[in-house]
Image 1 (cartoon, one colour):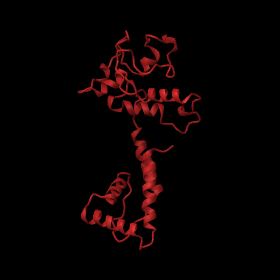
Image 2 (cartoon, one colour):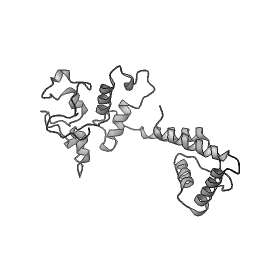
Image 3 (cartoon, rainbow, N blue to C red):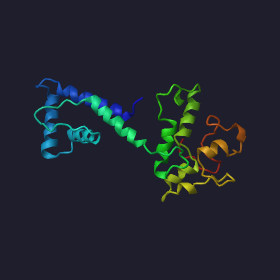
Image 4 (cartoon, helix red, strand yellow):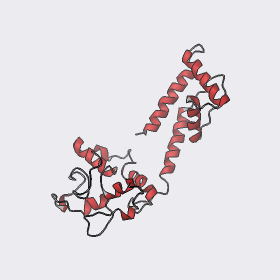
Length: 212
């Protein structure tokens, strides 16, 4: 499964190449050539400038000719996007709880959602849509646990200080503590799973519900 960015590039390049191969009398082709001239000759930040700028960011350099529309190699661009994306996952911590704050979200995503091509991805679990939505919210940090709400304070609360107000161990109030350690007022701690967590996803009744 490719990202929305991949889909956007495929649609954009398909549109671009369709105009490149259109007849010389095509009005839309003439408009794009004029757009190219403005971008490359006069430095106007228009559609052609944006496409060229984004292509350079993935290592693909669009010819600066302005008399015709250059054809873009979609496979080369997609390969560049995939290489660029792979660099984001390098040198990540293996545990989101011990990852540096700047990479904690990325580390969580990498460990739980990145391998879409596995034989048993999480989104194909045999559960109802409602429970799957709850599970995905849980894993995407779309909840009101202190580890998440502390990010939105101004200034942000350091992650090590976003403690669970109900945990006797004074641990960070994250999904690990929610799953394994916290006892809800109306749920026994032995029955807590990502599918039995009450709405909203929080450590206790005193925390506000931020996301419906």
